[in-house]
Length: 425
Ligand code: SF4
Image (cartoon, rainbow, N blue to C red; front, side, top):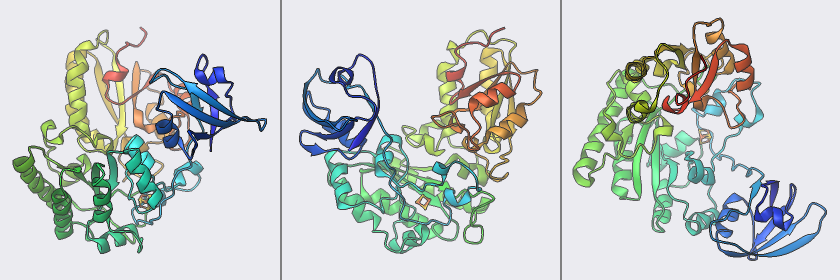
């Protein structure tokens, strides 16, 4: 059963009398469990919909509609599938106390992997889930492999019953499912020979594995430092050598790069980022893989559409990691727009200075960085630093921050998206 949270006006759902609180029970006789069932089972032109209204009345609707016309309901959020693992580097363990409850949920959900590109380990898949992945063709999935060696993987996941990943992937691949994979690099555990083996076995698995990224483990002040550490510069350089060796093989044999190091891996290694061409389709850009090159490309493509910024002063707030790389992104933007961009790297006061990603910046740190800055016409904030409800990690809302600082604020993912309209004079 799925509950309706709202009904859009002038839609089939409104015409049928569905409303907030209506329970969607079944489509064509099949019980509904979550949004996946709803989306896939209602994709037909003609459906039989069984509902229970908030007053308890059960009704069956025989619906025919033009293909593609939405029924017009919003659904309650799916119950998140909990994680069966306890990785030492888990981000949840690295959270301070007192944040929003939802941040402490360890999710490991193949549905969100398909829908949003969240990485899942697949260790909590039941036969019924496998069936659904196959039936609904949930592809590509984003999978955290970490190591193909079952013992190493179980150790990393702290899950002695984690099933072997390669047979799991094979079963799904035989039904046409494809995967983007990642390896979170934990030094002394899955680097060196283990990393070489993992990259090789995933590559040799065949074209169902579309690519593999290597991301250095990231810890906060609160993480389990007695159990896990971040890789050194030398360890990151060694990992880059393995990634690039595998990419060279993939280039020769398949004409794609396939293996990628996250930007953070290059940063920590002190090695220059590779060019944009190596990231294939930028499939893992949300995972911090090729983000800087992607930004540069977005700016190159969109900058000629930006007008009216000459002489404006724009503050660009970001985490301290991107702070080092941002000048190469901002210089062309300043040249083309005539605006002055000031980079404002912000230290993370919530998780500690070692957490350098922009997406985890708390509102209070951004507020401190902008206090008294009347010289700025506009401040650009990392788009990924707020959730869908406009809340930062520390639960400050964007509205509260905007009221507390003296300039206009805009969220941005690639600068171009936030600069189409100049700020008021
Ligand atoms: S898989 Fe590991 S890192 Fe991810 S939520 Fe579970 S315990 Fe945390």
